[in-house]
Amino acid sequence: MLINLTDVFTSEGKVKKMSQTLDIDRVSYMGATYPVIEQSDVSLTFTNIGTGQVLLEGDMTLKVSIPCDRCLQDVEVSIDVTFSHELAAPSEENVQSEEEEQCFISGYDLDVETLMNNEILINMPVKVLCHEDCKGICMVCGHNLNEGECGCDTFVPDPRMAAIKDIFNANKEV
Image (tube, rainbow, N blue to C red):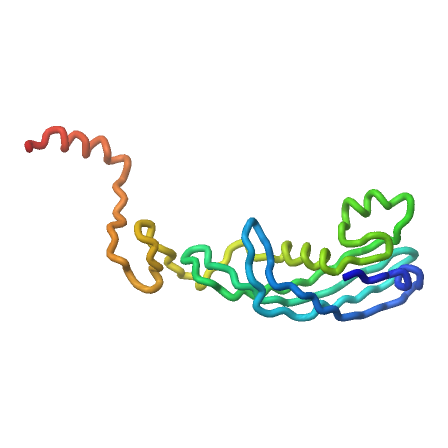
């Protein structure tokens, strides 16, 4: 969805507010795709802050279903997206630098979908847990340890004691 900002760039002191509905059904992040459960509209405010300069401010909230990093149970995560960008009107001096820095604006047209995709990715949580003391899954059978013990032998011998164990095993009579 493109929004033309010519009137905001050319009128000093102009403020333009708008609300946009985006149809986002999933978020791709770090090689995985997560379904979007709920989302709010994107509220945008454009303020002319000088000749050929616009301050873009906005926010959005969405809920995404992401698996817990320890037990793999789905967790509903709320992502609050708040952003602020200074946009410059296209001119011959800043055409190349603007394209490199801000891929969501082309000339006087703002691509809201690209902007929001970038902002959502920036605000994605690094680690997701179903609760702070999540026990994870059994390394042997994969049972969710939050639901109870599985009975697997999870004893890992100390590798520093391997030499002593070998000595005892060598002197053992069969």
